[in-house]
Length: 445
Image 1 (spheres, rainbow, N blue to C red):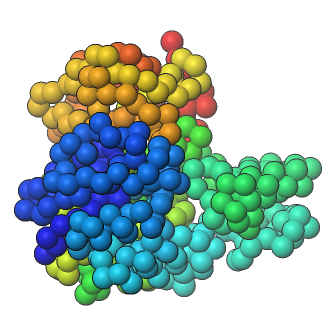
Image 2 (cartoon, one colour; image 1 turned 90 degrees about the vertical axis):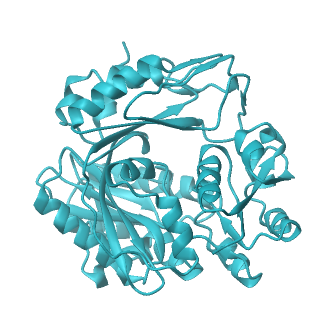
């Protein structure tokens, strides 16, 4: 087992990893930017090293500085968390070249799943259902027009190096395709320095359902059931839950088997997530595989009583997984608490938290790195915490969530708490009758 792990991340996920390391008797090193010097992950780690200025490229994306921090602290492993360098194959390779264990999959596995076209080709070979579309990159607008006629409108043009909804355009007819193609190409080049595009059939009325998987270095793979992530805004998730209210035993079996096939196809080691689009007829299609821990891993932990960070560390240290597939025993919901103003188009709201009271009680978990007096910097993602409730049934989990949200007091900045309070009383959400388009018609009161 590792003696000291450096956490190449910040905020709540860095603190989450520190907690598990402490339970396992592993020393921790926090790295931080000048903007994060007062963050709790810096205070709670055994050691802390400043690695640069407030911007991500100067600190949390600065590989030479992170590697220097590993060297001066004698860390024997790096946990990348999520975001930043978590799916950066170059960083994983540099760690390996310097004898430091990257707690995650190998660079080869990250590369196979990181490029959407390569991932889709791998899934087709493995027998995992994929959305009909281009077999490779689109050569130009005329190529896009021909393919769109073949698979039928509506179609969606996507950036091969994409993420977070960038470089994506839905096209409803041929008259729109040239403008959409050019716009997606420009956005992809600006966002990812890669303007490669591909096309898929646009799945109408979709649910976004993902399967949590774990694989070890000995070829064993299991799944830990699903999470429904359909409540999202501009392709950014706001609420996640497990199990999905749309799930059936047969669908879980088929999706679980497909996720295991997907992970096994690349001999996956570590924890990861296979994401699917599911249409109204419960046909499902592979979207992508995230080769890292995810923000919403907490809901899975609550319904199957399984510490996914601990499992990640154990797998990286060469231990075997149980190989058992897990069924959800309870129901858990997670609300992302962001420093955003839901009454003003979710505009970011950085600043100083003047008053903070976090909820508690049975079935309530809060993962956060903030405190009264903490200044939320403007340089990073706006998420300041996650509120998770767990209960015997979905109805009870929603009721507990509403109660917990009502107790959650954050003053000094705007947050998404008012949005979540209204969502928990929305009849459509309560009924479980929603798709990824749900928030397009949701209005704050």
